[in-house]
Length: 307
Image (tube, rainbow, N blue to C red; front, side):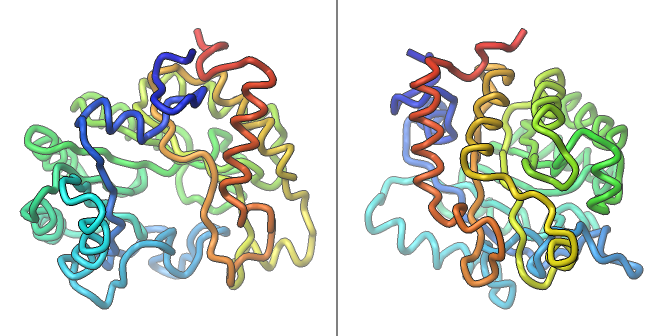
């Protein structure tokens, strides 16, 4: 039996981590802080796959203040789990891309709410100033802080193609700065990016395994309406991974990831009305079940190939 499990999974789930860490039901509440993105200013269009909501499709309504966004979610969850604890998840766009005082006002507003035990802050490696690093370090001393960094791929040619706006060296420097301050780090990657082979995707997982990261989010590339990627797909019809290909690649990646890296996400959650491809991604639980079944069939576990 894989040691980091409470539900017979063969990889270290976020649910398992929270229960071991807090001995309580813990929920992340997605929030939209109204931030922008450095990749979208001065005429930039952002990454080619990015939606108009900036990866915040399931975050709160930015027209509402943060407390209202938080309480709308909490009021529903509290009925079933009155003793639950909460983590404020600043999800949409780049959540360190603002003056320090604005960041402090928004983060501290959430930390003051009842039963909030921490923050998850999603951002980019090129959008954290030295003074923000110092503030994050101070936050880390008094709450359960996780910083999520989007990488998507370790390959610079891919980063250039998707118009990421930074290279691998910039990402690596950021991770070193965060880990030097003992801040928990979760990295986002995307499988199925145009021109990437299975071997390239596995190489990204192997690379991340060398950086001492605490968690990973694995996404499947999905083409959504009104994006540059949608325009490219209409013209080129590049290969979209099948569900079977995706399952195989994810399992290979898990095998190379250290067993103590928490798998925060292992598939995506596209908005049905906006999705162009792949339609199989809408059946999230089928994907999760197929990963579980195939890992059992192969008798394999997270970390079995890590060294």
